[in-house]
Length: 321
Image (cartoon, rainbow, N blue to C red; front, side, top):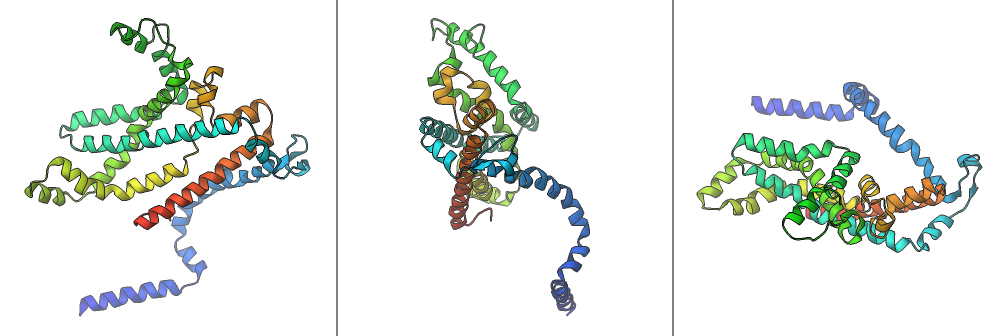
């Protein structure tokens, strides 16, 4: 009887709370809104207010005329980009590099998290975690300097190693040969980011009910079967959400890494992607409207990919919205 009374009182309280006007509920939750307010201001200033800059893509933008004094050009800059001889090269590089990063870089932290989860020596586990996620906090300037030094023709560690093993007769200038560039850029990205992404998957694995592993062990399931039948299905919602975000940013092949490691005329055919192309054309060549049109095209395609990926994931039972 007492339980029924408590349940009834809770239901009445919830109902009366819903019946209150919006402004009263807003005042009652003022602590939450105070905490959210700084983040909201930050997003408005840096994410929403600058969006008026997309007008530049439809104008012949003039620095002295500004947004309201420049002449309208319609879709002229979009047509120029689509008809440009660089269009197919830039799109090919963007898609190939993005797909390679997705196919190799996405499962890498999952595999590392699964392996670390099986390590029982906590000291060794913490050391590996620390070593693997530290590169994430290094800027691409430092990382690119490390890669250039590693692959250098003069005293580069890789050339010295390959020479000692008798695999090469003379040093190879890896950063000047287009056939090696995609492998270098993808490997560097995986090395830099794999540890940080692993933290999220390890946290998801830590939330799996341990009694399921005990029951599987009693039934005679091996560690590999436990991974496929318990661990992976349990963390699948996290994997799907990260996959949606990665698909949504499929055209973000990279900027800092490609600009620093692929800033060579010999590598332009394989290193020039949408972001570096927009930077070179817009900032260096002062074609601001053209660069804005390229950036807007990329943003629209990215939103479309994110929406399609979320729709497909929703059919599977997990989605962002």
